[in-house]
Amino acid sequence: MKIDGIILRELHLPLVRPFETSFGATRDRRILLAEIHSEGLTGWGECTAGEHPYFSSESTDTAWQVLLNELGPMLATESPEHGGQCPRIFHKVRGHRMAKAALENAIWDLEAQREGISLSRLLGGVRDTIPCGVSLGIQPSIPELLAVIEKELAAGYQRIKLKCKPGWDVEVFERVRHRWPGITLSCDANSAYRLRDIEHLVSFDAFDLLMIEQPLWHDDFFYHSMLQKRLNTAICLDESIHNRRDALAAIEMESCRIINIKLGRVGGFSEAIAVHNAAQERGIPVWCGGMLESGIGRAHNIALSTLENFSLPGDVSASARYWKEDIIEPEVTVTSQGQIEIPDTPGRGYEVRADLIERLTVRKEAIRAFELVG
Ligand code: OSB
Ligand code: MG
Image (cartoon, rainbow, N blue to C red; front, side):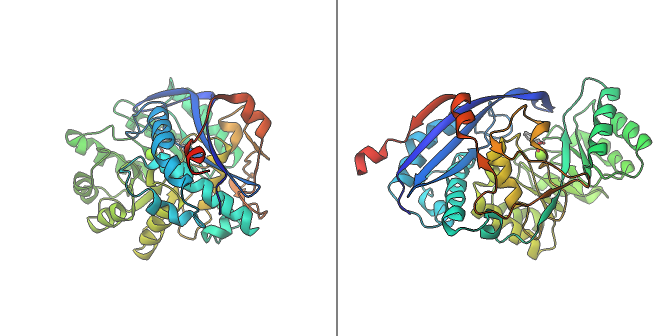
């Protein structure tokens, strides 16, 4: 496909409520979108980098720089037919996976429209509904957390994930389990624990958690493997997994029994599918993580979650949990059974609200390579 233009945009979107993890609280999102024009169609991609380089080394600003000066010009001078060609085009740039994913996913988004099939089908998805969970940030108090859980269970969500850190863990799990002995519950530490906490982490086994997500260092396999040997509860890796090779290493070392796949963290749909397939071949279930995405990233997460081995509920939930008004139409909704129904219309299945996006845009820049290559 001939690329006629690539535009980067930064949107300011306040969350309806702050989201707190072990590395800090987010109130306002700076959403970075890539918009690719080709032969009368527009593909959209979302860069999931955070406002600060806390979850990963990327941030909104590093991604903007790399997209504008490196990746955008590389893509502009190629005419990829498939999103799957993007990793080769971007090969020279090390890391910066969230930036790469914004462009690669926009090409897949375009390709599905051009082929007149749903993005889910283009990716090889097999589900017409996906199971949904929620990720609940650290709250000011346990009673406030219990009230939030009550609301999300009433809405139908199939799994509750609690953000945790030293000082916000066993007492919280005790109170939640006491109130709801049977719910599917997991926790996510975002690397808040160290080796001295191993005995403490082993005590999490008492709470029948579905998994403990990324308890130790963001770049570790070895100590997670040591910890997994001590735990009955499954470890799930998030931050540590950047590609298929990482997934294979983690599985081989028994550093985890479950993998969280995030499109941005692995660099886009191609690598996400590769991680999914590698895990599936080895009997390791996966689920789709979230990064407080706008509707565009959310639509892409939904399409990815239709692949067969996404057998556990993801952190992909309704637009209204995050935004007063989402930038897609219809907004993402979750049924009373805690499922999202997969649209079967061509492309991403959710229209982009261009007028609203224009109004929310605080920074906009065209990739300049087109002027050079004509
Ligand atoms: O570790 O899964 C995580 C949000 C920002 C950064 C890291 C994580 C998260 C979430 C939120 O858990 C999931 C969501 O989008 O609801
Ligand atoms: Mg996580």
